[in-house]
Length: 173
Image (cartoon, rainbow, N blue to C red; front, side, top):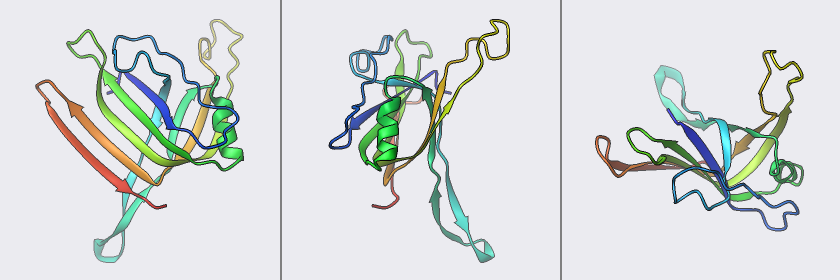
């Protein structure tokens, strides 16, 4: 389970009027604390086999990714990418934990290439009742993304799960 998910736009589209800003997240991992990242509340990614007659595998389907993030300074960036059909060159998502370590450890990364924003939905909650069910909820932007390439990368430099593994799936152009 990820204790924190950070993401960034590594290669923004050419000619974007509202560039990705990110923010400098306050945490104790020196590799990520000085760069512009955003926090993701939720990231859904689904890959599945297509099965035909006689249970034969016919191919693989990569569903669009769903990203939940704050409604914030980067909402205009993603809205512009959607409206103008701009391609984001590269985005990366970093998953952290800190089991028995005072620093956050980036143990898993998903890298997307040639990303398109298919949908942007803003979720507003009535937070006026301090004791109500929505008290303290942030305003959320839910993005539906697709990409031409997805890389899943696991990396741990310490035991007990010391390993480095990587799979790349090329979906299309």
